[in-house]
Length: 483
Ligand code: 5AD
Ligand code: SF4
Image 1: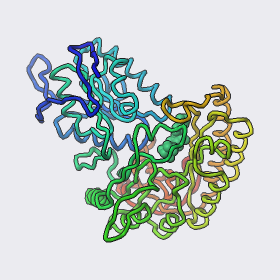
Image 2 (image 1 turned 180 degrees about the vertical axis):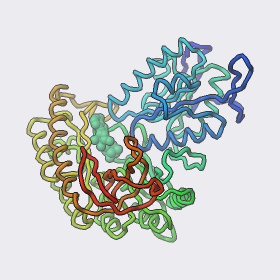
Image 3 (image 1 turned 45 degrees about the horizontal axis):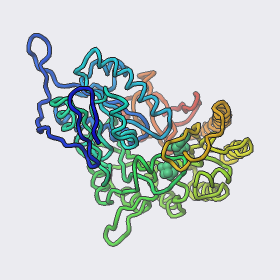
Image 4 (image 1 turned 120 degrees about the vertical axis):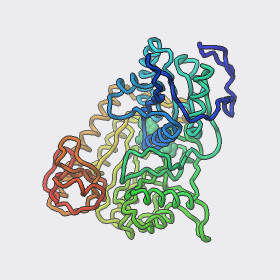
């Protein structure tokens, strides 16, 4: 495909990837100011979407920092970071229309900034690149480069290429795994780390774009996951969150003659000395099995939070969404989970206003929230994603009705979340101390095994340890405690 970039000659972007010619230097410096002092090139990455994207951003920052870039994220507000940066990169999300609209809006703003400062380099990575590919170059001539989810390590070369030739450059690979383990990663947490174990999804939920953007399921071999987890622990990490679009269908090959499925992987990771908590997200009900519940129940290191998206409680909707289960089958799974894992905290996702949803379907979902009493629920208004099976169905629930149903569900859930939290008051629980509170430096913030946030007074030297905390009060969704 041939594109015009508005800067120089049209360039060719092949299906495999564009031609990259840049040399692999490590001194990304530019002469700035009148005194001839050299300054490192500054890059700002803004992450949208899920935890997988947060992990990918940490990898991208690590790789670029290792190659000599200065990372100017965090601290400043988005606009201030952008203004300080020579390269602005957005790690994008496609799961809902709203996430894409935010990126488009920011690309517009950055396009104006680029008119004032033509040296500014703008790039995209993440799911929107996989979804729209080179079409984005046409729509946004201010865009300089794109890298696919499997090409993060190519970032330095791609940016070099843009700087040398002022071409629009895309590098988007179509096969292989989009997980990069690297010791140059710039982790946000000292004691907590994300650890992707699989990507992609083989389910075909009709509303979902993930199978298009992240492709088929690919798992990281169990040996590699174990090695990376051990490396993280050797760096002081105590708590790891395993990531994947559907971690429950993890297939990590064979190890010592044993098939490494998700329960086996969890058991193996529990054996790592110094690793004190393992959580995971996210799961499809179809693959949440009794065996998995038993492994969790037997291993106190595994988090007692289980996120299991329901989406809708109407069987008619579930069928239309191709969720592979009925509401009764879902509740049976939850009942068994609660029976086998005492104190488990179940959370969920709900879509309001999916194609064909009637008032009756919506009422069924509302009743389900009352019946199951989730600890929390993310509620999303349905938005059509082009290319998904549901994009052929009518988007027939009017926006105001979606909004109303969304709010009703949120209201019910807010009350239940509060009621569930109140039940914890008076109990003494184990809390992993994460950090000082942002609001009050004398307070510490930690997480219970159920992933509930707890704030309490304590000495900062407790950060990174487990402590027993008595829960005494509730402020919004945060539990307050005393050591
Ligand atoms: N519209 C609204 N919500 C969606 N989700 C996924 N696709 C869509 C869509 N097209 C929600 C689902 C999923 C969560 C990550 O995002 O609830 O579980
Ligand atoms: Fe999307 Fe369904 Fe796969 Fe989740 S399980 S990523 S909702 S297709």
